[in-house]
Structures are given as C-alpha cells and as structure tokens.
Amino acid sequence: MRNKLQLAIGFLVISLVMLACGTSNDIQVNSPGSDSNDSAPKTTSTSQAGSARSNPAPVGSEVVVDDMAFKVLTTIRPADDLVSAGNMFNSTPEPDQEYVFVEVQVQCKKTIDEKCSLNPDFSIKIIGSDGVQYDPEMFISGVDGLISSTEFYGDAVISGYIPFIVKESDTGFVMVYEPLFGDSFYLSIQ
Picture 1 (cartoon, one colour):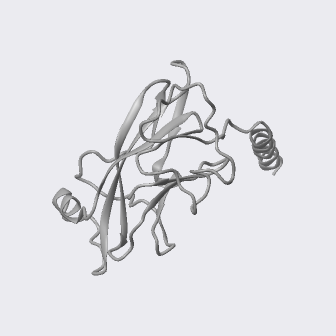
Picture 2 (cartoon, rainbow, N blue to C red):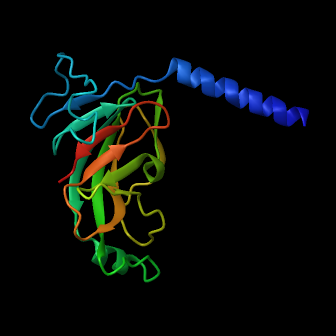
C-alpha cells in the first residue's frame, strides 16, 4: 500500500512540474509562400490563424508548435481502394462513409541531440463542416506510407498518411493537433 501511495505522489509531482514548466507551445503559422526563417515573429494569439477551429491556419501553411513543424502535403479522398487492396481484413466503411488519407510532414525543430515525439493516433484528429471529430483508424495493415508513433531527432523530417473514416457528405476538413499539455492548433486541409 505504501509503494502505491509513493508512486501516486511521484506521478502527481511529475505532472505538476510538467504543467508548471510547460513547453514552448506558442503557435507559429508560416503561410504558404512565406519564409519560415524570417525573423519577424509570427506567434499567434487566441484570435489569430491556427488557434481556433473557427480560424484555422490556411491550406498549405506550416504550423510550428511543441518544437515541431507540421504541414499537410496531400489528401486522398476516397482512399477505400488503397485500404481494401492492403489487406482483406481491414475495416470497411459503412455505406455512407469513406476513408480519407491525410499526408503530413513533421520536422523536429530541436537540436540534433534532442528528440521529438509524435503519436498521431492520439494527438491528431480531423473535424469536418458537420462539426464531427474523427479519430485516426489505428488498425490498418498492408498499406504503405502510413505514419506511426515515432521519436525522431532535431532537424529530422518524417512524413506519411494518417487514415480516417469520415461521412461521405462531410467537407471542409480541419486537422487538429492536441498535445498532452498545451494548446491545440487547427490547420485547414481542404
């Protein structure tokens, strides 16, 4: 019993320290065609692009948060044929649904000795014009190019597709990155 109490207290202390120290969660949006190395500050506030679903960063933008730069490269819709060709046991969408693949590129903005960590299954979602939030499909096999949870070092770039099942009638998708601690960002993908 004493060990469980010590473990719980230790977890609580670590959680409080992480919340108190935080991370550099200022959101920086580099619009398409802008120079991401420009020294002018582009940090958003609560009313600026990328900080709210009602005002997402524009299509093609690069969003820098949590020491990582995110960019949506392409979207494949529908992607049902890719999934069914990958493995006959992959989930089949309901009649009014379809697969959407969102290709993202993520660059670690830390030093070459520091790691970034990305877990798209839990931190990346999409929301359509219907206001429904869609979580990634985690159990797809036989499809090349899917991005998975990974750790990567400073200056490294990873990319791949994140699969979702969405309503066929839903449009105007926005990608949402929800870190464990800190603020979310919103990036238009259509």
